[in-house]
Image (cartoon, rainbow over all chains, first blue to last red):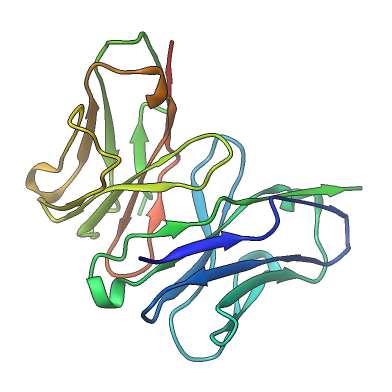
Length: 116
Length: 111
């Protein structure tokens, strides 16, 4: 079975500073990887996804992530954060290409708090 | 495309009561998922439908939980004899292939 570890539970950051959220996964087969954002009392919104091809993927709101197969990592980055980026961020993985169900396994989440 | 819709958004119920939640997926999506999210945790998979067929259920889905997707359209999740441990956010997602779109969730509080 696959699993996801988000290495930081909380990340405080100043406005306009860069931020990196770390995600490692484990799986015995190839995976698809995702980052979702969740605002308080809301559902999850997809930021970006890695399915295949270029290991650097760009998403919405200026976020990007890099897939590193050798290190089994998919870290999320943003060069300059805004107050509105304050939210919970979840890394998720699926081995759906093999199981054909595409159910997601999520990490425990990273809370990003952006301060002025 | 109005996105995935869930109803109600919030539900407070007394222990031992039954509750039912509804999810309306994006219309052209044939796959529908239910997840449960407790405070401070990531969502956990509960069950999955492809069209009207329920293809997988997690061990988290005890016999007090039942889900249906009649005619492959909307889905309902029912919890019988609710317990305080059932308090959580219940999230529905739909997809056509890989990318899942989530609803706003139903927050259940069992008192």
